[in-house]
Length: 516
Image (tube, rainbow, N blue to C red):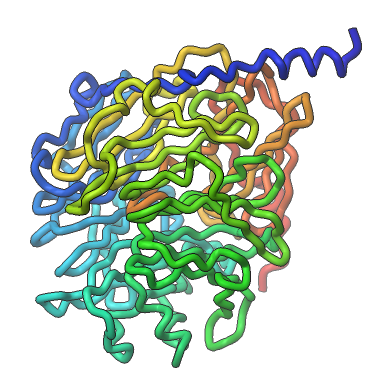
């Protein structure tokens, strides 16, 4: 039999069962049961290895309750620690995003709140946290119907090796005072560790008005593949989503062009959450954002110039109150599936059940009823992906409206292979390698890619882990494009393993020799 025939046979053997993604609720069994949040709205979720023991931990922001971290013990158990200082007055916080903003090797947490100041919790060697908030990266609460931070994302906008910050504001008024900075979304560049420059302060007129649009989600991603991270913003109240193309230096700090309408990504939903992925493996980023009515799936058709086309003939076009959205290969068949958090939040809708969609080579099928514990009548707002037990199957942490948080373990039964990769930046690259792009090539010619991001979904950040399902293949070729543009072929990596790669030391030495 020829090699081509063997590969074709392997592809045909790929499992495409509608029951391929099955979950069980392990909140109680794992020790992750924040009962203190059982009767209040869920806040933000941030997943990261905060204590550097090699296992991902879970941070949850408290809405009327203290913020908490549940530390992963590495044996399927979580333990809440009282040794960390994450307390805020009021603790009315709804979003969170984890990232190592100061490049010291310890993951920090930005927390966005309502009717009170936000927080930037700097991780002090895994022993505790110190709030490093400053006026440049906060909004000043004004009482009453004050603005609230409802979106946060990290990304290295200017390529200086330090993470920058987007802060999205939801405002309960139709005609806000645009001269009042508390009403304006912010893109804040980190010029040196802890020194911030608000570049959105340069926007005037109609462009400034776009920055006050009831923002509920945002993500930094290099959407056009030019090596500079762009920004997609999801807005509520039919104000129109925004896409800021990163044009490079100048313009009083940094240049962005707002191109949402021109690119086909300027829909005007009651926007809630956002996911970015290459679900059809064609090399273009696809977008899935949620809304109170229909959800929106935008298929990428061109990178330069950026162009998307909305696809309505798909189960992803679900009718209900959508909140968080996630792309992830949940059955390791090599194709990213989709998860939609559905929750009332005080709104009426057709269903409260979260929705799970299986990707069959670019075509989605609704497999919610076969997903096990996810078939619950529990309204959900926040969601984040995690492989908490390191078994190569992605799990989910969900924040349920007035019903606390829960951990859902992926117990899918199949023999598909997988590969997981963490990255560590150095030199000109931020420590978390946010913005890095990894491509995986399987023997059948299938090409997958994932980008390291910090802040996505809805008010949450996923575990900083690049996960690839490989189907029947026991290995794959892996290539990294680091955020500074360095392309590093890793060669063939074995499947069913957890891999770690640091920025090449030789590149740090080479570059340092040319520094002024």
